[in-house]
Length: 159
Image (cartoon, rainbow, N blue to C red; front, side):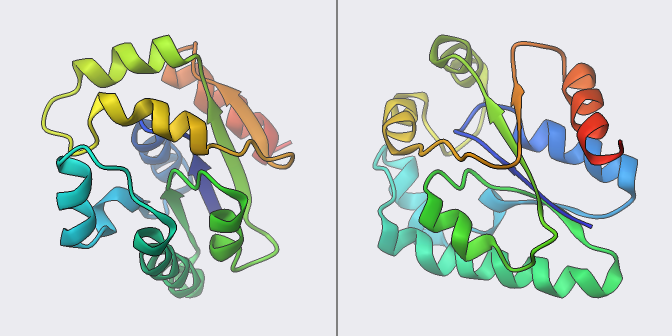
């Protein structure tokens, strides 16, 4: 099983990805942990990444997903803000897409409360400006508890 959890920073991709990983007993990969040092330095300085920064990172994540198929799959948490990014990640026709959707102010509050994360809250507006909402996959509102979000996702994945 391959599941990609998307959304702007601060929507809960890691929390939801870890919960799905536990449920399905397959690994969760936080896409943020695979950024090269140059990308992290750029974001840490408050500068958004451009498409050239993202392409090798997305290709690495796509390969990680392909490699995981042999052992049952994985869950990937990745912002995947643009459709062309999601196309790079679309390595298998059976990928389940989960898009976490939320109000900017709620996400802002969450981001400003986070400690020790390289993605600065001030970059949230650039993420919303870049976000191209897909017309496929399941869209989950983040204005509920993580348990409720996971239950809603499982309802879609395990009818």
